[in-house]
Amino acid sequence: MSNMIYPTTNFKATETLTIERGDGAYVYDNEGNQYLEGLAGLWCTSLGYNNRELIDTAAEQMGKLSYSHMFGGKTHQVGMDLADKLTAMVPVENAKVFFGNSGSDANDSHVKMLRYYFNAIGKPEKFKIIARERSYHGVTVAAASLTGLPPNHTHFSLPFDALGVLRTDAPHYFRGALPGESEAQFVDRIVNNLEQLILKEGADTIAAFIAEPITGASGVIVPPAGYYEKVQAVLNKYDILFWADEVITGFGRTGNDFGCTTVGIEKPALMTLAKQLSSAYMPISASVIRGDMYEAMIEPSSQVGVFGHGYTYSGHPVAAAVSLKTLEIYERDNIFGHAAKVGEYMQKRLGEFRDHPLVGEVRGAGMIGAVEMVSDKKTGAGFEGGAVGYFAMQACQNHGMITRAVAGNSLAFCPPLIVSEAQIDEMVEKLGKALDETLDFVTREGLIAA
Image (tube, rainbow, N blue to C red; front, side, top):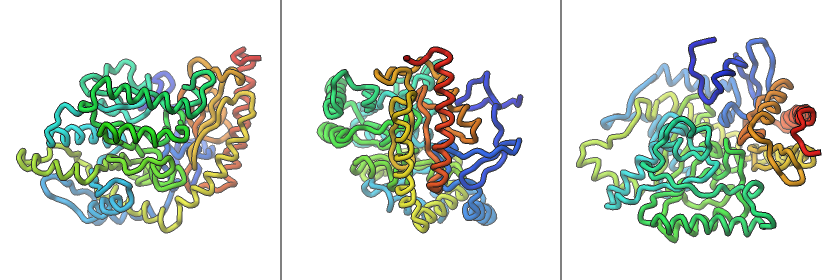
């Protein structure tokens, strides 16, 4: 055992798999076993492994300028070029971009910039943020407080109240609908709950509503039709900003440039980007805000003498260069179009498991999906705890595919955007074997309804 404190790991089950190398859509362990990377690392290796263009770009930039900070008016061209490229891509009006190192710190930066902005325009009381149950927004103190998953809260004593975090319904019809409730009725009810929360707290105290267009770690929740249109109408009514967390869905994952495009979120005021921004070859994130928000912050920063927020590695030149090359490849090779085509095929193939006796729901969009396992197919009752999900995840691994159990007992799929339909077939074949083995397991243990 090493002296590592491992992230998001059961400390009694560390170092169970050692990955040594990767190539394309596959990774290999220290015993030479090959695995199809069914989750693109952590939803991030969009261009797969061992992409020579990205590797050569990093090496070239290291030789030219390995590091330069951006404090106190200093800059470098590659960082400015990346900011300009993103500004041209995102649906945020007159976008301005702040660079960080991860999706977590990007969301943390947004929390601070929201407060800075509303203080600057004379509304210091407008700082609360509405987040959803079963959301994931990161693990820094602020980002974990926005996150709506119990394992990210337990034992950490997070300052929800001090940060002004409010909680509203997850838009998951399969798990959240009342008996006999249609999808339209479900949407109307939870959007009404959102409005009642705003009225209770006071719209003049609420800065923003944060949402992943399609969730990841909480189980790949795709909201029903009409949800985002009605949410945006409520937010506009009460002058509350829409904050789109695109860390997972950004850059082709849903078959479009951004998840906002796929689900109909129009002109968010804030966007959070990371992961596929660099295909995970270098750590980088981007906190994007509307131009008028930035303009309001200029004079206050001048009065103080500095905008007192920034990271040593903000706009790191190597990360910026790799990100620019990643975006170039996306455009040149029509990666988003490829993801849309193969994603449609992936959704069709995953949908074949809807009749499996262990499967309660298959959901997803583009090249992100989930298969939720249930103890009773008729009622949709789930399994208690996460043991079944863990067993299924390990079964996939035993058959040469890496995936992840999320939301307890759902298996998530998010392969590199470069995969072929043949590799989707391989993924589905391995999943079928794993599900059958899991069914045998839960039957033996008496965990499934007869």
